[in-house]
Length: 536
Image 1 (cartoon, rainbow, N blue to C red):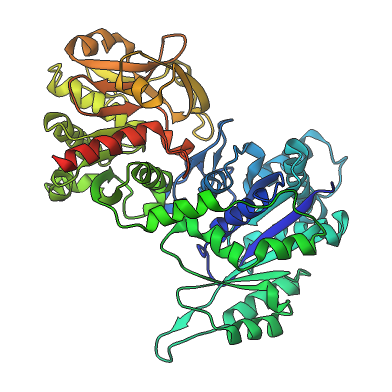
Image 2 (image 1 turned 120 degrees about the horizontal axis):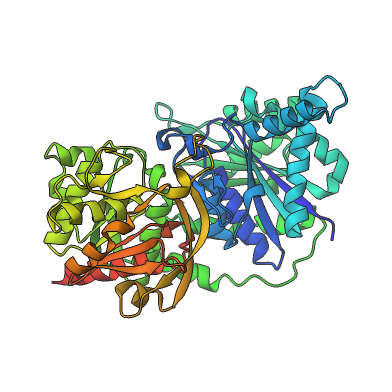
């Protein structure tokens, strides 16, 4: 069949839920038997978010092939349950770098390089890769930012051109907008939506559907008004009120008839009848009252919770599997260094120390690991969280008071965490870490092996430093077990503490492979142990 394209644009404000809406729409179409893939186009000039502070852009989501991507790709993978690849996320920086490289190579035969057609052609080429590489029936594409941003204009112009090239019958524009609530008059306003649609139409794009996001119920009269002023069918104005349960969004879109309308307008026929039973059961379980366990997440970016988006969702998935409600306590690691925030750690049933870079707050995380080890509190360390668990063990069990990572102290006499050999000659920071899917062999009889129930697994990595093998024998003699090892035996992938209810650290990022229906085994292990501690 001819590939169909769904283009998601945003209006009024950013962070309006465009990514979740696109992901949920992907699930609606997949449930009807269509092959779906998703792309995110980010208008910033960075090549990728890999070198950006999480305060700027939330977490960096890593794919199987090592691509460092936008956090919305996590939503796509979790909702649609697909494994995306590098071409699923590209930026203005990548587009311009490619065009400039071709110009330097002489590919344009001396021509003047311009936004139109050279930049827009490169954007269209990259969009075409999604359909070509996956053979998808439907490509869902989200444009980052909002209409009116100067950065996104080349992307929107490329979409306008693409609509004419592939045929208007094969393209559908969905505009996700925000209805602000005026407290003084206690009413929702549609004028900002009208303005954002007018801006979109001024560049030659008329939306086929408007998703009207709001924190308050949207009356039919407002939908009529949006349909009239924005020139869309009344059926195509979909009110989307904020829900406490993220995974309810597909059910709300289904109830609103979004999939049926899309299929009708794109000239498609559903291949199978959707079965929403498992998804409804998931949402019902989320809403059901359950015993609460407290998980202290000790990080350096906790002021912006999006910095740990996948960790947060993984905790929820695992908690659901254990029949409990996970209450995450967000603990700033630098506060622990000053003696603050310890009441949250000490009242927790489990502790997570996630990944990160740089020395700020690391001593607080080490103190949290020490507390977990000494008080038998279930602990899960992710990437840096594993490394700091090993540093703490070296300092307080092996007796090496100056033990550290060479990332933080290059002069330490006990570099228990050291830069990987292949990383030592690298000077560029972007895209040069150990990235993507790597195998891990599990050691029989360990907590990690019991959690997975498998002999070998593959997990996604994003790091430069590793456990220093020179200290491995000492660690093992003192009671640390290296329960996951690379197939060649050279790299420690999982470490755990002997005679502890659950103190496990992984060099990889398990949070990137957790799914609502298939929680990650290491998170399940943590929540199971936390649940047991809570009972006691």
